Image 1 (cartoon, helix red, strand yellow):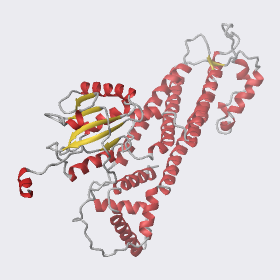
Image 2 (cartoon, rainbow, N blue to C red):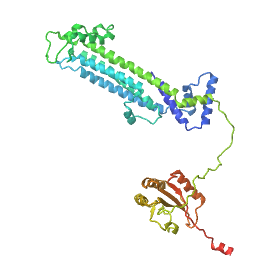
Image 3 (cartoon, one colour):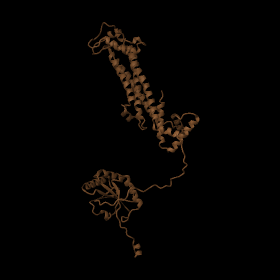
Image 4 (cartoon, helix red, strand yellow):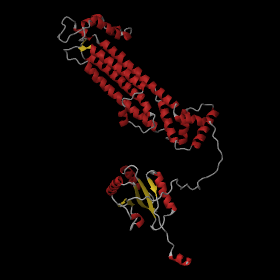
Length: 470
């Protein structure tokens, strides 16, 4: 069976992801036109036809995308499981049929191993139905998870199919190895167990196990005489009264046991795993949010309002909802990136317990030390306010934002920092548009921690104007 439903789902999801960058009006017109075209031709607008239409519009090579890559990855995973299963099947059968000419090959061990393999096969299918992902860490490390969120929901059934393919190859190589060893070697089988079990009970067990093929190959069903004659005990060196040829009569039973209870279940469960992948892919495609949006666009007429208004000439709103705050009476003053050079105004420098410089050419270690020193001062102060002088004509930088973020983490709770943008001439107020950029910066960062204030200035009239007034 092909991977058509899975490929369809992955291609559809990739196309929906690409469409997120398109305008809704464009998508509506495109898909509505496709639906009307299908209606004129008398064919249903299926997802397969829609994808073919999109690939035709996109040009050559549009069909090869993330879906092909994902399918190639899982084909490599399947082939890896198959190769590993073939090698393990050969090695396992060599171990089960190891015979050195002395001790018999215990049929009981082979029956127990077959039961274990059947249990593992059933648990693998149950894992896929329950959605359990035992190999998620391995797939996260080596797999490709850059696609959308569909793959985590598909991985339980995909890994189950890979495991079943590995088990199928394990069964085939094991059966081939056993038949080859039967031809090339003289194997001696027998049965033994520590439990107190007589030949009658053991014969009933093997007869029940051989019931599925008893009508097809009667010779592959051990009779009571064979069961009774081939029991051995580890302490007993040899049964001299038994014909040595009878020890090899177990091989048809072993071959059919392996075929019916390992090979056939693995083949059936591999087919079941493939069907589960197809069913899961169809379910995810039907419930995909992009499918519902596509159906809506194809069923709803696209309206053109004819509005020719062009807002390209509209200027952006540069106003901010924050207002300037009064200059706090802080005892700590920090100068950012050379602000206040060459001399600080007396209105700001007087009465300060800590005046330091930060940013600009100052090393990061010095900035950190300044923040820690300010934190120590704030922990003992009643007014936990700090002034940070900036140059109003220079825009806020990412370095300043990192500095404020570090301050917010280091300083005591309830601390606030007031940005004070200074004009080129400290005795004058900065321009309004320069102050606005600092207000927007404060609003964008932490409005509860960062405020903006201006230094009070008393602008005097030039001497020429004073003379005119006199």
